[in-house]
Length: 148
Ligand code: FES
Image 1 (cartoon, rainbow, N blue to C red):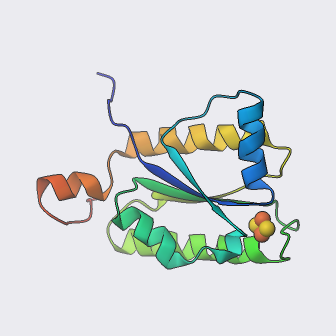
Image 2 (image 1 turned 180 degrees about the horizontal axis):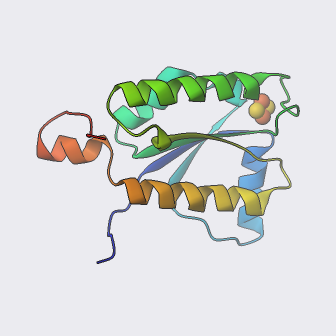
């Protein structure tokens, strides 16, 4: 039986490259899942660990950060910081008993519209396979992290 689970996914997208890639994907009329809610940020270096965890706590089933290609950040090292923060958030999420695959980092230049759409599709498929995050537990028991 096919899953009817429709995940909520939050994407923190840097305004320079990745948001332009998302725009390009739209201009090219490339389909990507509508469950990806994009939050535009000046640079992925602005996304802190708390923001990633809060997205999950507030009901996102998965969260990813999409920044400029490594070496191309408009603020020099913002995406390197984001890479470290995403890695740390993955560890914390695992500590809480959730699958760390619910958090991810991608890199897309402004010309990578098709790749951005592909990231959205792949991540949505991954989360669909993992099933609901905290929402499931809220509905069933109140507030307990999922079991691995
Ligand atoms: Fe895009 Fe920093 S400006 S990641």
